[in-house]
Image (cartoon, rainbow over all chains, first blue to last red; front, side):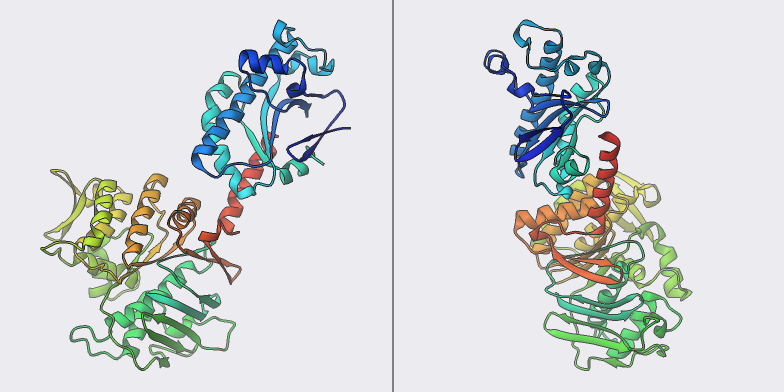
Length: 165
Length: 334
């Protein structure tokens, strides 16, 4: 198994089933040139393609929560588009750092999930955050047939689902 | 204002201690856990002190208490209210304003209580109880059933509310403290109710609509508006609300709670029993925004757990169910 640390949590993956999109060499180029925002990684797990962002906290203030939602949802959208560029070897996103398994174009035709894992947040606070995210992400999720628009869990739930150790 | 209260051996409630009560107080618990019983017990205590010595009523406090218990709980004999598995007396007591009120009786009590605080003085302000169901469309039925036929069916929380609503509106300015609350109430329902020739009508601009064709939620909110207008509710009043959420859309619940919060700042004490996550959540926000204490008494398996919304959302069955649903959804999604 491969372990990757993000936001103070150790994520566990099967070898070859994770693509560290945020750390790919083209990342600096596309963030400065295209203004793209990229999520932490993409993982193929349980026959589903997951775009994952890990956070060490979530804001309580309303305005800050809206900015937080906008930033993270933008990361999911851009990462999906960049991943399409990677699979099709588009000039700005051609990659030598992706495993052959993760370059399987069929994954795009299957189930896609956007997953946000927030460390330390109480379970009772998750629904409110999810409501804000779902409202913001509904249109994009609808266009790509992503249902629900986002999955949000805390570190305890991620651990019980075998996502982190 | 009720500062503290204790309920012992009332039906399934063996001992409930309500300490450090505040302008807004919340009781939560599953169905049949005893939430309404607690509200009714407090109502009996405060209402009895208010009825004592009112006008020409020369009944003793013992007679008033027994009468109020009988018609509020509607049991064949008062002893039926005592916990079945307890040999001890049922005991209700509270610190109301600056007086101590206590009553108790045993399983064998028929229509009298054995002990009541001796030195009670009349409380001028009115308590009022809002049952979960609205009363306007059953107005005449409730009056007939309780006042003429003297039958069980609608208990005194309904009957007292009907009598309070009947009180005519008065000329002159309303209490200045309630102006903002009344404005918000009328904005929320876009009208008000009027009692004319023995019938209730809902007035919306120039339109008058039969109360039977008026939405349940509108009727519920109109009741509070009417009681502020006819000055049955005054500073010092105590309002008991059973399930404020019933018949109200979440948006209306939120606005209704803002109005109750305003009233609570004007020396009105509120007790409410709820099942609603929206109610708890909104009260949590009020507690944080206003930096106010909102005690929550959670009944879990005949025991009462105390928490305060100004310290965050407490562990409780309503939130637990919300989390369980979230986790059920997570299991499906991931």
